[in-house]
Image 1 (spheres, rainbow, N blue to C red):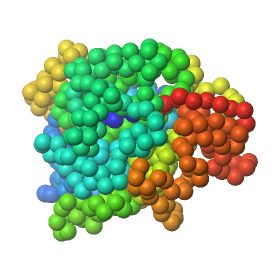
Image 2 (cartoon, rainbow, N blue to C red):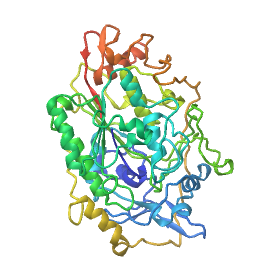
Image 3 (tube, one colour):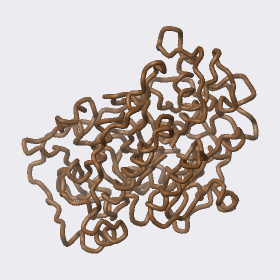
Image 4 (cartoon, one colour):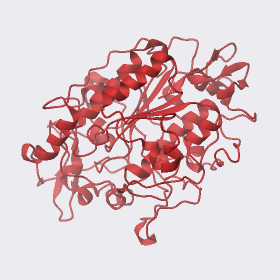
Length: 499
């Protein structure tokens, strides 16, 4: 799992369907381009001045768009999606494309890209990262200093993994995201599950390589960027983060025995205050007794019952579908649901119990050769500018970006706007949730009535379905006969991993 920071889907990948060589016309990116090749999207500030989407060919960020609870809900404007400039100024309309992000565009043109992947809540980094590990935000709505100490009522995904003997590890450059889930809990796992701080991303990746070489890399792995200089949060140099992600992917591709059983989910924690044109759909409150820690008049009707804005998400694996765009609604709890489906584990809250797992991005015929067993060529990430050193270049952006860059300013005649189209989710009865570890697991999709997790060797339909192959194979066990061509009989695999 590789989670970067603070960019919306349109902000990074909105131009993907408009660049012919990528053959991604079915991606829901910027709706309309003007005759100048720039998106027509425009928003008004509180004085009625309109600002159009714009591209400045620089890896520096500036202008400080906000993703706070208030700014995010003002941007949403109850589904009208017209408040980004009112909330954050002209900087909210900025976007990048492949001149600055060639490696990201190459990944998105090669592997499945998910254009309905939303963050889990309409606010900042910490709440979304807690959702990504516990299917709840535990009541928080902001990123505070010092970091909060969140003890999720139903536990953490890591508790479930440990309970069922499934290995996990977090390799961190500066700070470990699991540290948000209880300082004492995290301290007990330093050196056994939490590895770092390594100080520079090359050292972080070297630690992962050492585990691969020794044959002891964990089943579920988080690899974390340098949050100070290389995670792509404003005002960092975004090419420093791109270089990190490229090297993570390259690392696994260069180790064939590990690559053949790897699933990498690359995403962003939240939108960073940048514009996106797709309204987020409604969501369930986690049902664990937690609610946003804000006054009732300041909730905007959102009791963790609205997903956040879309963020970039790419599924990278030898078993990923070629030439595929997923329009399935996902959020960060979909990653949890994928882990739970893979190892037949219980859900933590209503959120992950009802989330879509991400198997539609993977092939469903295990008899055929994996589409990307031979790793494809990915455009290399350029070094960050001007020095190639993330810390120096991110500080450079912070110091002089506003001097070097100028925004276009207001426009006199805004072009016609495309009305936002709500994402429709078919009505369903919510699946149940369980308290992690303490109360076992309920009967959820892709679980069995047995007492063991699939990762412990449980048999389904005559096949030992553990590992990534098991994740694919259980599709056959969970759909009516004839709906998929996966053959379970005689297939056996174990030890595969979600990264």
